[in-house]
Length: 365
Image (cartoon, rainbow, N blue to C red; front, side):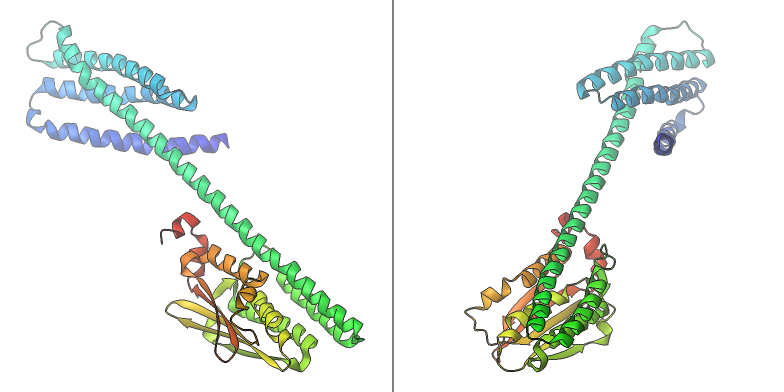
């Protein structure tokens, strides 16, 4: 692991080091083109660039040590400024010496010329130091952003699991009550068949517990299994109708989202009827959205509809749709004039894009 960290640091440092100094060298050469015929100027600039480049490695060692030890900003500033000043004096001295050596008129070594070039040398090293710490802070912020995004994805994953797992014991409790009723009424054949179908349904719902996305066809299959169980319970009082567009069967949808809607339709609709009632499942695509509707006959009035829509199934479904899609998904409930209660869900066809997006990003969509 330490070797990987060292490799990452080298791969990050060397491209920036080489690229930065190459650009700076090109800038110096370009601005000094008119003076190429002056050997002393070329000697000074060339020596200056070489010294500054080599000294940048010394500054790297100093800056890296300060960064790793998390030294305070003020103390780091003082140390880097002092180191830059010392190295700038060395750069100015060597550069002036090289200029003096190739000059046509070789004169005595003048320290005032060295001192006059120290600020320029120091500025280059201080700028390099500023870029180093700037890059380090940028990398740190990116790491923190990735860590926060990863933590948020884990939190959303846990939330989705919790919401889905909330449904399974709720459904199981209701189904076991239905089986108990069949046993009490000496309907052993019906109870046995319901237990077998319940086993199949639970097997499909408990397989791959980490999977949150399935094709709509899988949800329709689970809906068939669940309604088959309920038809054993209600017999002729429950009529089932499917109007599923074949083009929607491969659309990815949240797993186990249909069963609670069907359970809600039967519990609050069909079970209160004295006549046969119909549960109808529909699906269609419209304007880059998938629309799934569950309709059921009911004798409910508008006054008690709020009690129906506040049940565990609908409440859970609304939470899941909001958690996954944000403003791109919706759950709508309405009571038609003919007494039909409708739950209509709209979901974007591009499911995975919205599932992968962090909540903070979805708020700005």
